[in-house]
Structure formats: structure tokens, C-alpha cells
Length: 323
Ligand code: SAM
Ligand code: SF4
Image (cartoon, rainbow, N blue to C red; front, side, top):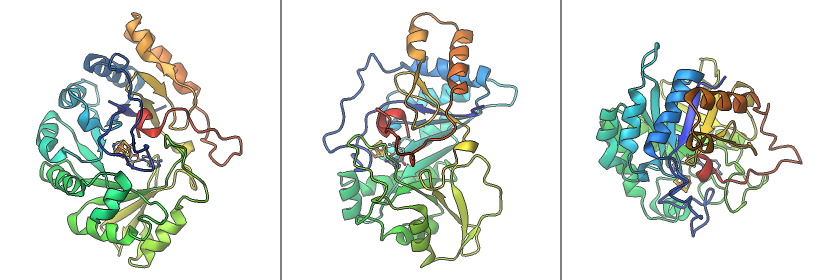
């Protein structure tokens, strides 16, 4: 059963990463469709108290643009369980994190993952369509200083854009004590620009890192963690590769997702959703919401099937599902 809940707090974003969104952005969700702060907290509480969720990660879109984020974190952390407070984390592009890191830490946030694909200003601009590298760097520093560690960095490599910069990015992260993980590009962009042949696969990422570093598999069993981790130059620092496409880990996946408009999704690639917002606004009790959620989780498919010729990209892009 899923113990790790990803909650998307908004589909809006202040960057336009080419692998995620078109330059003009998307038709954002109507405000009335989005869960209110109370509704988010209620559903998270149902998941923690009745479904056994132990970790809550807030994402988006860009969660830092969501008003009420600090309160949502604090109220999530305050949910009482026999096993103590749940672990909370945030996946963010880092813009504005320098300003909010202390408040988030005080609200009880445990960790952050910051997305950063290049430490070269021009490449960053090209990939995100915004000249904001300095803000992300400041956000990372703010997060580390606020104790939101270990700070993790997520990177996607794009052919011909930053695929020559994997080792440079790793060196930069190692110097600062950030744990870098590369994510294979997935077919989740709104503009359907992904192709199996165009993507940089895990084997290429590792080969490019091994030209500059000695990598050895990290000892611990991978379990349900999506990242395959490697010790860098004998450790203790590590680097991870999340090979969702070429080395899927669906069998061990313990995640469930809640979209910003209150739909349960059992997989990023699922084509079905279960509507908790409608049920909640229609007067469902917590027990009824939990039952509906459980039914959705029982229906989870065994694998994502990206390599299956009949694979269909989900109708929502990553930014609207919650990455
Ligand atoms: N805006 C936040 C951020 O960028 O971290 C949170 C949402 S974003 C959708 C979550 C993660 O998904 C980011 O690390 C981003 O790089 C990754 N991502 C977005 N589109 C992707 C794609 N097509 N393939 C792989 N990863 C993707
Ligand atoms: Fe925004 Fe994150 Fe998508 Fe980039 S990956 S456009 S930061 S939601």
C-alpha cells in the first residue's frame, strides 16, 4: 500500500522548462477547482490517519507560488499519529526559496529537492526560458542554511543542450554538499516533445559521469527508492540516477498522488483519476473519502508501459499532476 503521498499544490509555475511546459505556459486550473488550504489538509489527514501514509511531499507546478504553503506544512506536521509526525518535503525550482526557507523549516518541513539542470547561466536560461540561475543558487544556499537537508538536486539532461554538463553539475553539487540525482526525461510534457530516441538514458548519464569520477554502487538495498545510488570516488558523497523509463521500478513503487484539484492518481502515467474533491464537496465523510481512495489504490496498474507500443501519454502534463 502507498506510504508516500505527493501533493500538488498548484499547476502554476514561474519557469518554463522545455521538457515540462510550452513557452506560453498552460491554461491554468480555475481557482475554484483548486483545493482550498482546509481541503488539502483534510485529505492529507485522511491519508495519514486512515491509509498509513508516512511521508508527504509537496510539489506542483511550483509549490512556492502557492499561498498558504507554510501553513499547509505546519498543519501537516501537526497531524498526530501513533508513530509521530510524518516526514515532509518539498520539490521546488528554488525561486524564492532563499526568502522562505527559514519559515518552512520552522513550520516543520524536513527536506527540499531543488531542480537545477545546469550551473551555466546561458544553459539554465535556455532550458527554463528564464534568466534566474542566481535565484536557484541562492535558494539552495538558503535551504542548506535553514537545515532543510540533506539538500537534494534534481536534474534532467536534454540532448544537445546540457548533456555535456553532467560531470560539471556533479562537481558543483559535491563542493556544496548537495546530493545530485539525474532523472531520465519522461513523456509528460504538455507539448508532447518527448521521444524515446531523443532522450538521454541512464547508461549515457553514467558513462558521462564515469569519465570524470569513479562510481561504485552504494551498498544499501534500493527498496522502494526510485534512485539508483552510486558512491562518488569511494564516498561518502553519492549521486543518483532515476531511470523511470529504461529501468522502471514500478513493482517497488509506494507512491500515490493528489492533484491540486483533488484527484487521486496512483501513477504519474495513469490515465485514470479518482475524484476526491467532488466527493468532499458533496459531503462525504472522512471514512467515505478513505474508502474511495483505497479503491483507487487497489486499481493501480502493475507498470507504466512506456515501452509498450500502445502506450498513451496521460492527458495531464507533469506540471498539472505533480512531479
Ligand atoms: N516546479 C517544481 C520543480 O521543478 O522542482 C516541482 C514540480 S516539477 C514537475 C518536479 C520535477 O519533475 C522536477 O525535478 C522536474 O525537473 C521534473 N520534470 C518535469 N518534467 C519532466 C519530464 N518530462 N521528465 C522528467 N522529469 C521531469
Ligand atoms: Fe516549472 Fe518545475 Fe515544470 Fe520547470 S519542471 S516548468 S520549474 S513545474
